[in-house]
Length: 517
Image (cartoon, rainbow, N blue to C red; front, side, top):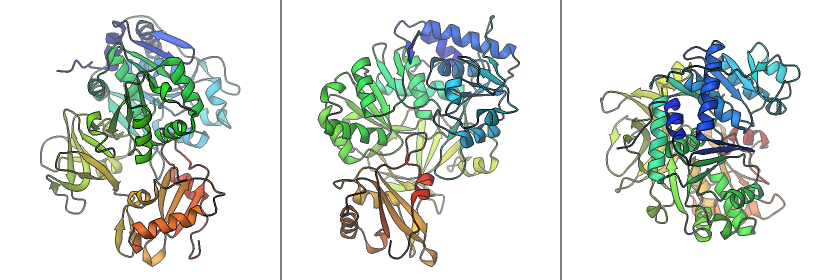
């Protein structure tokens, strides 16, 4: 039976009683007892400043201890923390602030340096600042207070996380205290976290996967060091300096790691402290997972799956990874993963392929002020049972042993001459070719014939023969209707704030797709 905190304040208080719990961000190293004192003081200060239950507080801070303290304090005070990714620019930040209508924004001079016009972005909003005043912005210091802080209700909203998405503006998803604490306990349990562990947290706390690193460390009472990831050279320094036992990443990070291991920027010795690594946000490329397992054979690889609408969903035990490196495994305890026929809505049993539906524990409270999106994603259980489930939009395959594989997005399936095509199947045909890094497959408007398939790869743009090699490969591996109409090579593919390929930005880089291109 897992020992699960009831809310984030209780989680911090439990961590404060464990000597191994230490949070390090930049130059500041906070023992959990110090962290708790700062969280409680900040929470009381916000309440004294007028924060009411359910009020949003936007956190526009760089990677710093105040980011961690404020996020936990807002939730502890009964508010809803809205962490904003450190790399978002004026338009994206302004959208989040308009959408969540915050009680206040907590920011700093360093973070606002990344904005072209911080005064315009923050105009009309109440601003609390840390580390000094901001030119052109009327702000007051982040308040602190004293007194007795009562824990919020388990079912109270705690955070509002904005999803990057592949299309449209970012949407906020509301998670409550119960789900955040349970998700932390479940992940800490299957990773086997203990007080002797040390997590290197590179993912942003505005990303559910990244936030879980912090909360799992607090649950386990272990060390966590949070840092920005700026490149493979910096990662090598972090590994050598901190000697972490755990590291979480997305496929783009592991592709960088594999390339660093091949080039010598990273070495086998750099990974000797790593007891485990985790991957989520997409399947690892086969060549990258092979490199990781060859160079760091002692390191357990946990393939994971989650969606912001349900926080965490599944994992594959490391002893199954080598045989099934592209599977994300089975449901977490308390979670059920259903497969539903997208056409009929029928729940599929046994070996099957269908839309993944997350039922049971960890379902979010829903989208922030988007009833139409809620109706589409958060629905009644298709089996007629009580409770709300999440329709993920992911087409998933399940084998006889209950393992799951990602196949495609229901909203990304391409249609060419009447054929329904997964862009990921096209990408797989070229993914492991020499000279090819990341791969993205897009569908452009092809008129009456449906989509025209376009392949974009990270590689050497000066390699004149690469496009033709890819074309030949696709003709050899794919049916004629799946052969792409065009191939584009970029030095690197653009990424969104969570490290995934930014398809919107990529489309802007493409020339028109014609019969000859």
